[in-house]
Image 1: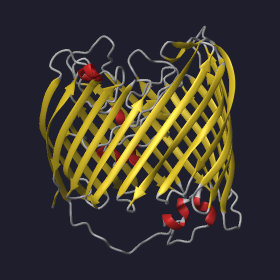
Image 2 (image 1 turned 60 degrees about the vertical axis):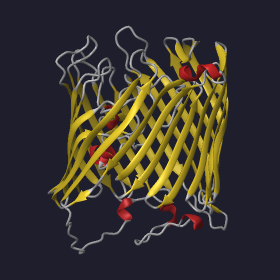
Image 3 (image 1 turned 90 degrees about the horizontal axis):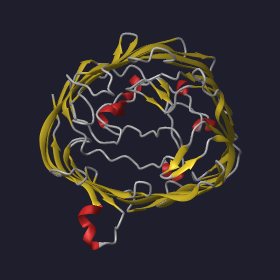
Image 4 (image 1 turned 120 degrees about the vertical axis):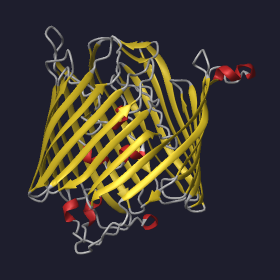
Length: 534
């Protein structure tokens, strides 16, 4: 119950486990003998609209009209098959903008419903660091634009004592962007003992285009196995190993990790080792950096004092090091380091307050372009920052959270303001929310500031109808993104959707004669889908 900051469990739960939830403490519900009477679901859709891309020299306006079908069939009470034809995700909210101040890839979470459903079946690796399967590699290019998906098939659920996941997707060729590809994923695992499981995974990309560019490889495969062993009530031991198969990359093409974890009412311990080879290349996965060995250690202590105001205190720290796996003749040794020391508190109304100290180390073996035209020189850099974080009562009509950081950045300084908040009118019927991140960075090589601004407005007419808008500004790309969606639902995921997307350049924004040049792209779509439940 959010307004009273309460959580209810039908199985007794210790107060301390609000922050360290243990699934094995949940109860087991048996003997209901429920039967499913809906074995087949058909969900066809039709879509029409137009798209204008002013970055194209010829024919910037294109009309679009198409249709498709999603099918769900329950093979058994615990095994489900999904099929999709000419898949469309027009009604999905756009990605949140990010500005990258690191040397490594950013992570954008999956938002498409087809891939989110039963996504846990295919999880393998270290989240947001080494993921053997990352569904955004299917149907989305490196810039975030959609690549058409012709058809797909998914099988998930339990077969006897095994958890099974099968996925096969076929994408269409987009000239100058990507060849036609077939993607396949196989995941099999089995639970044993207490909180223990063993499993395997296979991920494949196979080009189905007759011609490939000089920089394209015809296929990529990744194979892996994992073991999770739980012992006692609170400890577990997790391991995985994976190897990628890419033409021309026959050595240092593996990744593996070992992790020991302990999590009880008052203590959490994480001790791990991760290694990723220089040529490890899971093309249908996500790896933010390669060629390193990473030991790490983390500890958190939870105190739950008796009192009317303070609910919990949890001091914690995290220690990470990255050591280079170098080829012959290349620099070796410590490449990066990160230490995080944090004292955080949570109050009875759900608000939070804390202070942290972060220490960083980066070794640059070549110049790093941190911002257009600003290159940080090679060298070893030690720097740190202080961070204060806060969060108000999230159930209040007026709510806010964020952090302020002051410290060093490579050979210079950085100041960061990160604030987000909102206001609810009429309960949750109207919600206005905004976020703002600003960095003030001063370096010997040059000074620059960055801004990320987001504004959301949600209006729920009824439980089955809504209007949502999401406007973003990114100072690095110098454009404004607009996403507006109107939904009139017949079920939780079907109905009539009207979607408008636009990107507007902020260069010469005040010049009335630059209207066409300011508009980079815009699109308007009307989509209708309906659920037939047999």
